[in-house]
Length: 304
Image (cartoon, rainbow, N blue to C red; front, side):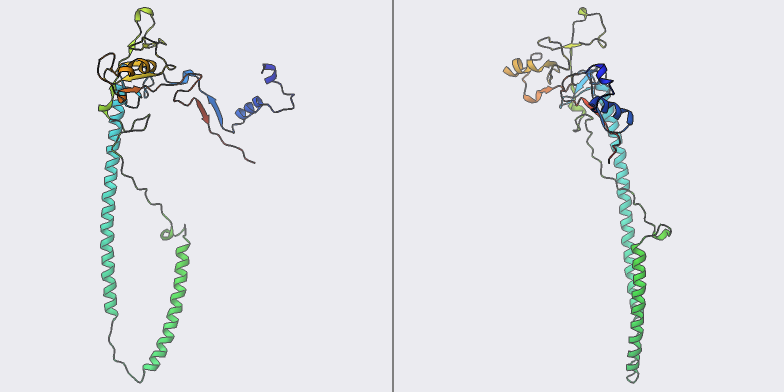
């Protein structure tokens, strides 16, 4: 569509461009935008600092981290878990003390009820000549007492069913939220699976020959090559890490060369399927590689 067509306001049709322009100006409606290459992390950058790694390590799931950054993250998570565990133990002890107090109060109430029942039992001699009158009087008194009890019971039930915000004794209160027992496992910030220090694998990138270009390694766009085929590595090229040597090779090299005999070409060690770790990479500006390239902003929606 030409520039004249976008700015045309004499058309009889409400175009898609005009709708998007009005939506952005009004402040209503959810907007979505496609991310470009500059918004995607490079394959050799740390998932926490988003900077090129100096001492890279990789998890068994294929996420690359700077060694110092991931170790600081694990130590920080362990201290937070220890704090949450102390709060949970404190809450558990408080609940145990409350249950003991409640059990003691219930026992005291049972004893008091027993005493009142025993004290109310009084043996009186029965007069056979006045027993009928007393029975009639007792019936009248019992009926009046029953009526009074029903009226008081209805008043009490109505007062209990309708809480008042003005009477402190009837005001509903918010109970404190109970803490759940925290898990002792430290989770990976990317995959969400448990991560341990001894499971981190040291990665050894093969740099490009510095004599070919005088640009610094960090500012250079192409920094590393495959350890076997010497192909330039990038986000558009799937890579894998070999566990015994820690070298990074292309996925094509793995399928065509390494899987034929399952031997590490650098260290000469025998490989298994678990020793070949696919390196998680970002996406390019045109196709996604495990990363969602669309960003959405949720805003209020006007409904009729």
